[in-house]
Figure 1 (cartoon, rainbow, N blue to C red):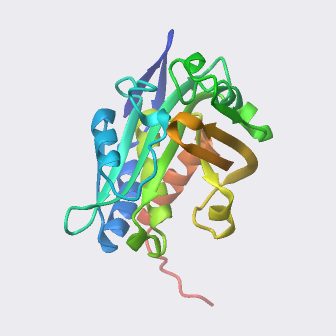
Figure 2: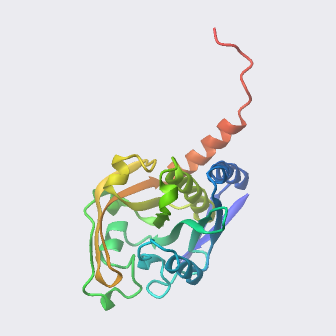
Length: 248
């Protein structure tokens, strides 16, 4: 089956097997349920902002995902919501697609275009990206961020990787991106919070004074081909028949 996505001035077709994606996604959705979290997704970022603003202990929502700062066109963003047995918010994350066919992720960050529709309106803010690979991240770039987990769920092993798996499946199904990337704090890599394919320091030193956001993050990413292979290999291993041979 074909999922056809459109880019500016061109139509690009990517072969996506929805059954493979659904099997991959089911693995992580079931894992979330086992930890007491029910996952849903949405596309209205006004709704997302109202949820995050009403969520105690969550820090400011990054302007990437605030429609008043950086409007997200239909089909170019989604968010994930996890609730507990009482229907209270346990975790959130958001993702959006950037068209960097004439740019790269480093330039997109440093120009502040990643955060604001009009960067010139925010001259006091700054972002520095020194990760060498950020300049090679171009084309259709899916970016995941604004990840937050409620304190009482943070000690439950694997929550971040469960949401990571769901995010990879959804991003692949919706966009089949050339790259999928995030910016994460260094301590999360030291503690193995995330399963990452590639990572580099200097992803982004961010100072967004209006948003009260100051961070020094690493860049983590996976290529589109690696993402596709991960989903396809999972499907093959899940469907592989048991061996009829006994070990010698």
